[in-house]
Length: 407
Image (cartoon, rainbow, N blue to C red):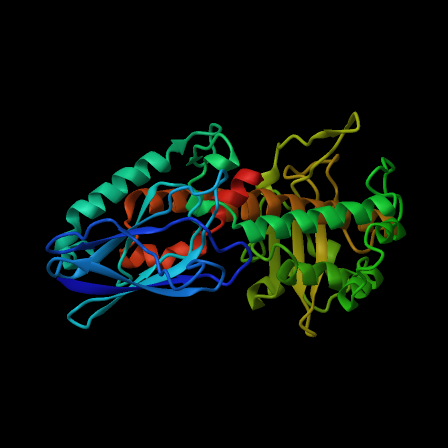
């Protein structure tokens, strides 16, 4: 008879402990242990928050090198008693210590399998071929592809947030944090009379009613300088969407800007500044012909502008010209800084609106959320948890499916 020393670490976070019984089964390269109840009769509770509990698992003979553990938490109370173990350490009779990272909620009575923490490719893990195949087969059942809409990347099929695998749901502490943040925000808006308001904003001061206690140095600076050309150009590199600006090596044919428009007083020409690498272009052609929504029974309008920018000797990006639609014509003038104050300001406002919409649709929604979900589902369906790539990528996909479903 040989003994394996098992140490279970329960996370030190809210609601991490459990009063349920916990069973473990050790899987080795030679054979498996029996299903063993983890119980220390000298302690009242073995798996409370922050507990580090040690147990002995007897086996008739050595089971070889440990490659997997199986944890089971049968329901003891009338309701599910969720548990968040951090890791399990197992010391073999040969003196070797094996670490099994967990870091996830166990909220059912099913058997959960966890691999030893060492990252291994298939060729270095010959004893676990069957384990890998069973894991991937289960993952293919848990993470099914779904075609949400034509033209969009595939996503994971889920009927509700609770149909997601338990390992991917928000932690209970995060659920409480999100609910508290949402509740306090709604109460604040309710007290300020904003939550029930249907009035349009007609001046910049109206925004202060939404964020009366959120004033910062940056907020005050933007409020003071938002109309200025230098700040308008600055946002193309330092705003929410710095992905669009490009060096202009030649003017597009659908953007007929001339020297008389932008450098009528010299001391240089447009061609010279292009040659020096001082002219930049922002082209919002991806928004062309997109139909805007109807809000409060009013048709909204979205432009697909072209913006020409000039890097000055003071290293400022100054707008030279704005064309709000892609096709030049009499009904699509080129706006210039020399136009009337409000014509030029309105053109810049349309550009800022287009920049926001393109950022949200392309950079944020498509490239941050939808494509990330493709990689997340593919990772879970195809690469077992012991693989180095799985360990490397998992932290970067941790909340992707939950956030996307809620959105």
